[in-house]
Every structure is written in structure tokens, then in C-alpha cells.
Length: 255
Image 1 (cartoon, rainbow, N blue to C red):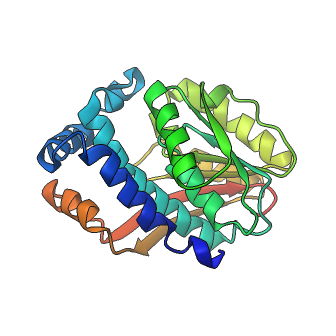
Image 2: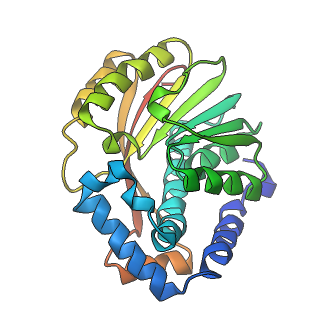
């Protein structure tokens, strides 16, 4: 990674703090984070309706807590798998959220790729545009269904981070062969999900399918020192992210 990008995460997170804590207090964000985490852990049936990003509080909590964790997790995986060289021409970030995951991959590349972020949520698309601009990345974000995106383009990488578990079983069944076809066609496909307390029943099937296609499946643990605001939010909600954990599937040109 070029020298002038080493402090990029810290500068970006400071900008995210200014952006969201100018409108809400820390206590308000903490309460919203508790409600948001409850949706992810205990009330997952509400995810399809967009409940996770309803209201300014949950949006700020997502941007201040989950987005930086996603950034750091993807950065760690990209480094561990050596996905920065050769640099992809473009990263297609499906279900992009705030754009942090795709941005983390792009910033690791010697030659900055362009980015295309797709998300069904209008606020997420706007936040992704802000993220790209704040990090000096070229690209665009559009509102759309990532599972129906056109998966083509030479030199393209496809990132599906923290999205597949939010799909219905029918959507996952349709999406898997499309991703594997894209990998067979020369695209690099990276799928990332958390290591959850409750097992994802679909994960083993996807893992077997990726390995059968010449890909790989990995579990990750990365020790991390969080920025102070992120650490305090983590502590206030009873979480413990001194270590980031995730699992990934990779298929395509660098698997």
C-alpha cells in the first residue's frame, strides 16, 4: 500500500465521527446501536424490510460502529489473501452499505481501482458516495438489488460482504450459481460473513460449492486496537471486538 494511505482509516473514521456526532449525542448513538444489534442478532426477520437502517439513530450507529469494523475486517482479509496485486480494474461491491468494505479493498491496491456500489437502501447509497469522496476514491453508487446485478467485466472483482445471510433461502439459491459463473468467467469473487454464535445453515453448502469450483474457504481472526469512540461503543453495548472474526469464500483468478 502506498505510504500516503497508511493513516487513511484513522482520518476517515474521524470524519465519520464528525459527520454523525454533530447531530446525535454519544448516548443516543449507543442506544440506537443496542436496538440495531438486537435486530441483527434476535430479530433477523426484520432485515428484509430495511428495519436496520430506519431512523437517524440506527443509521448513525451503523456508520460509526459496523462500517469501520467491516472496513478493518475486509482490509485484514485482503492482506491475508494477497488480493491487492494485481490490482483489479474495478470492484463491484454488492449490498455496499456505507461503501466501507469495498473502499478498504480498493485502498490496499497499488493502482486504485474504480468502485461501483449497489444497495437497495437509498441512505446507504448516499453514504457510500460520501465514503468514496472522503477517501479520494473514484467510483459511483447506485440504488439496486445486488443479487440481480450484471456480473461481468474483465479485471473485475466482486465483493459480497455481510449480505448473503440477509437474503431469503430462494434468493441465496439463485445467487450462488451466478457468483460461481462469474468466477469461472474470470472475475474474482469474495464473499465475507461474520463467524456467528448461531451457525449459518447455508454456509457449508456455499463453502463446498466454492471449493468444488477451485476456490477456498477460510476463517479469520485479527487482533485489533479500536479507535476510542469505537471502543467505547463496543464496551457500552457489551460487545468485545479486541479481535475481529470473519469467514470468507474466494473463487476466481486468485483463489
